[in-house]
Image (tube, rainbow, N blue to C red; front, side, top):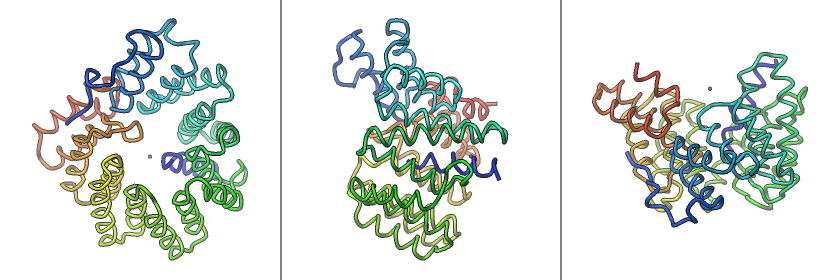
Length: 335
């Protein structure tokens, strides 16, 4: 998962940054029964309704404190809200309740990593080792967990050796990914090649990943990010157009539109296109927690403010606040 890249980069520098699915439209659940409530809470999380997801979880007996799935869901909602301490607390509880669950360890590692990337030198050093332990545990518990192996590989690739990083270890993870998701394996190898200064090989591997992926929109977004990093603007634009086309053929990959909008926002180019990409993502029925709708609304509002569309920006900010009233970046934009 791409989030881990920001996590481990932070560790390295510290050691040596319109529409949602209403619940009424979701499949019928089992009323107030725990399984039904959990299903509704997960659906709310996927559609970006952070407040609704947390409210549903609180309806469980004792707020779901003794339910591993509930604590994992709460952790993931808090993760999207950048509430790292709360996310760590709930994911730790989830792993205590179900220590054999790979995803519990994966999300605890991610939450710890986000906190580490924002911590002091000594705190980051300690937390980084805990991140690695959780990622390793997640991978060991489920050899088919692509996200766990991808995050572990990214950690090895980006983190300093003093906290357990190493390109040789990342290569070993890529070898395993070959057996479960070859496109992700090539993406990891591309990152290794870039670390070694071989950008030509990195580009070739990213293009290969596009060609073999069953859902190439994600790989086009990764390739666009690569070109943006190297200020190859024409090729970046072409990759973004291909990403849009891939989403048109595979609508369930709509989160890739959020990703490429983020690429444009980061390099401060083509704000109109970035806004259009976010609007198209928000209009999709296939939103996910990996691209939280309330963050998409907040980013759209920021773009609209810069484009002089103040009324539209206020509408987007109101939508963000309705979904996640405690999301601070949206609150800051309203001031």
